Length: 253
Length: 314
Image (cartoon, rainbow over all chains, first blue to last red; front, side, top):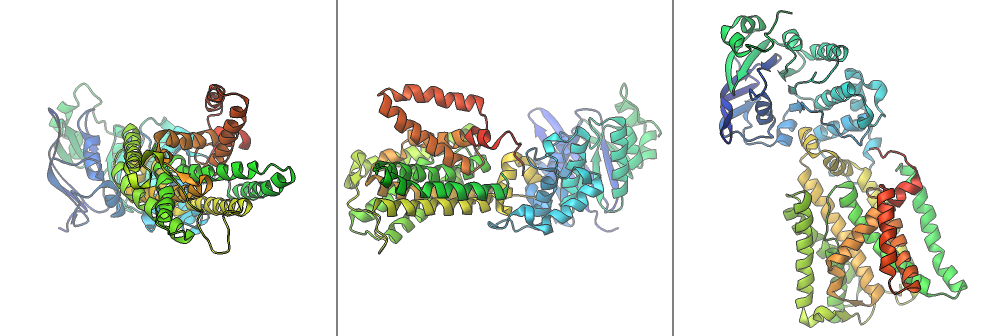
């Protein structure tokens, strides 16, 4: 078997007395959509933070695209093709939607030590940005200040920025969090269209979204991965059912 | 502000300032040439601070340091008999840029209150360094024997010196305007707006912020070289923290992140000082409440008031 796109070995992260990531091993194959689920406080966002390069693991290794990236910071990992979206919307509120995405295009293109030409007039930045905005359904809102977009639109913008960096792997931290039913269904449909084009690692509480999108699922509890498998396998796993006792049991969709 | 709009304001403002010397001559009030030249020099310092404060979100509380370095870069060579303006002003730009590079490399790793305190501490260190330079007058400073020499361009002629300052100010504003809208400018503005996001899309903001800090330092140093020629003396007081505060106030009063705003802020602040100090010895008691009112009721500064309540966008 070829080397997986993302390979995590023995990852550990401790915050004081709390072992937030406990010996996590994980392989993500190119092209698949991989979901990580688990009850609140299981350490999913901490894991994403370590994958994106914002948190340093205490032990373990992360290999991405055949390269050890454990010591690389977030900007460098992003330039290698590892982009993320945030659980709590993180955009440039005082820039237009188009400028938000154009910035991501610019970051990917490199060469930002250019001091004279106005960036807003560079078609090599604005045209790809427009195309990405169109693809997430924000084409008509390009000139709106990002702060003035509706919550759902900001979530879409968040994904658009990640996509504009042309990632090989997209880390999505609760992409439908706080969305209404309509919006979240639209987002899930959109993420479905990405399947196969870009590898996705998804952290999500919305079980409908997870079971619609994921090819494989890992269940995380108290920093440990207790089960990994196809949606069907995970749903039938007794340990998973026990972990979710009193919470939403992953239901067939 | 839209690009065309900025060019228009710059053109009209530049022309209006160009009319000051003939008007002052017609009214037989040569003092105004001196006053407006001083305003433009501080406008340059304030605009350079705005590059990092308004656009880069770096609250540097030590910007007067570069003013002082620029002034000493004129004064020290002059003391040793080197009067060539290209040497003096070139030295001012390079030395203050280097100082900003070092100060920035250390302070940009911090943020918030720590950044403010570190930049302040560096400026105060340089202030005390100035005091310790006994050869160059210690805390009394020293007189500048003569203004910088630029061949046929005679800075001792008040109007000639005035137009030199005006041209430098306009050029720096044009360059600054291009810088903030360029790819480079977009990176530092993005980092101000949301640094974790900027990093997550692949920018490493540190070197861009450091470069901006260095450019701002160089421009501040040039303003210092002009100031030494303006006052024909220099003292460590040029670097005192109250001077840094004054420059910062010009930026906030005029409107952060606008470049033109700080120019307006510098002109208005110095004009108020001039008018009020003629009326009463306790002019600061009057100036204080005026400034507080502007900051409270015009959150985006005078520029925001004049340009209307349009939202700023990228």
